[in-house]
Amino acid sequence: SMPRRKRILMLMSDTGGGHRASAQALKAALDELYPDKVDVQIVDVFAELSGPFFRSIPEQYNFLMKHPTLWRVTYAGGQFWPTRQLAQRTYMFMNFNRLKEAFLSFEPDMIVSVHPLCQGPPLGVLNRLGIRDRVTFVTVVTDLGGANPTWFHSGVDRCYVPTQHLWDYAKRYKMKDHQLRQYGLPIRRMFWSDAPDSTLLRRRLGLKLNVPVVLVVGGGAGVGSLHKVAVTVARRIEQEEGPYGAQIVVVCGKNEKLREKLLFEEWPIPVKVTGFVSNMSEYMAAANCIITKAGPGTIAESLVRGLPIVLSGYLPGQEYGNVKFVQENGVGNYGKGAREIADLVCSLLGDPDEMAAMSKRAKDLGRPGASYDIAKNVGQLLFERRQETPLREMEESRTMAYSSAN
Ligand code: UDP
Image (cartoon, rainbow, N blue to C red; front, top):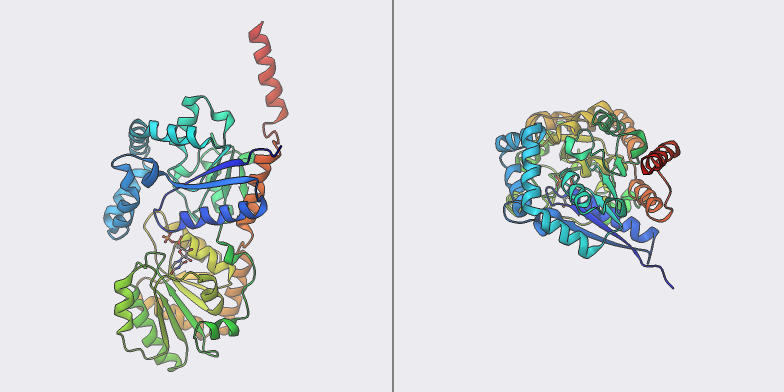
C-alpha cells in the first residue's frame, strides 16, 4: 500500500512579509521535489495558534514598525536574557494547550520553524509531551546579516543559515557544526531560474527600452519615506543626467496612500508607480539598480537578479546587520536620508563600470537555489532516516544504559 504522506508543519508569523514568503518558497520546493509524498501546512503561530495578547503579535509588529523608538525598546527586551525568558515562560504558560492540540491533531513528522520566536516554545511542548524524538525539528533562519539569539536553539535537529556570517553567529550561540547547513535564504520560485531578456521585460512592463531603470521598493508594507526619496532622486537624475538619464519604478506594496500621493506628482523623468506587484522578479530583472529598505527577502532577491543596492533605511536592531552585509560584500551602500540616497544612485548611474562590477558581485553572492537545496536536505532528514548522532555517542549511551540496567 501507499505509505502515508510525511506531514510537515511550518511555523511562521506575519511579522514582516519575509517569513511567509520564505515559508511559501520552501513549501513550493518541497511540493515539487516530493510530489504526493509530503503534506506541508503553514501556520501563523501567533495569529492562528495563540491566545489573547500573543494572537495580535503580527499587528503589534506592524504598529511598531511605524514607531522606531518603541520598536527599539521591544527589540532590546528580546535581546536581554531575563526579559526574553520571562516572555517565553509567559507564552508557554498561556499557550501550552493550544500548541499541544495543534501538534496532536496535525501529527507532524517534522516541524520547520521559519521564525525567530518559534524555537523554544514548540520544542518545550514536544519535550513535555514526551514526543520530541518522534518529530524532527529544523529551523530555517530568514535573516541575512544579523539575527536575534532566539533563532538558535541547541535542541534542534538542523539549523539552516543563509550566510557565513550567520554561521559564525550561530556557533557563538552554541550551535554545533553537525546541526548547521548553509544554502542561502529561501526565496520564491520566480527567482529560481534566469529571467527573460530585459528588453522584453521592459516592453512587457511598459517601460522605456533604452533608459536605465531605478527600482524603488519599501518592503511588502511600502514603508519608509518613499515619497521624499522618489521625488529627490528623480530631480537629481534630471539635473545630472538629463530628463532621460534614468526612469524610476516605485513599488508601493500595500501602501495605498503613498501610491495615490505619487500618482499626483509631476515628474521630471519617466516614472511608473505601482501598488503591490506579484511579479517582483520581472521588475528586478528589468532594473539596473534598486533602492530599498534593508529587508532580507528583498536583498536576497536583488542579489539573485544582480542588482546593485542602495539601502534607504533599516529596522533598528533586526535589520542593521543586513546593512553591514550589503556594504561588506561590495554590493551596495546605505544612504542616510533622501539626499544621500540620490547621491549614491547618481554616482552609480554616472559610473557604468562600477555599476557592472557591483552587479557581478551581487550575482555571485546570490543563491537562486537556496529553497531547493534546503528542501532537498529536509527531504533527506524525512525520508532517509540517516542517523545524525555520531556513532561513538550512540555507543556510549547504549553502554551506559546497559550498565545502569545491571
Ligand atoms: N514584495 C512583493 N511585491 C511588492 C512588494 C514587496 O512581492 O509589491 C516582496 C519582496 O519582493 C520581498 C517581500 O515582499 O520578497 C518583502 O520581504 P523583506 O524581507 O524584504 O521585508 P519585510 O516586508 O519582510 O520587512
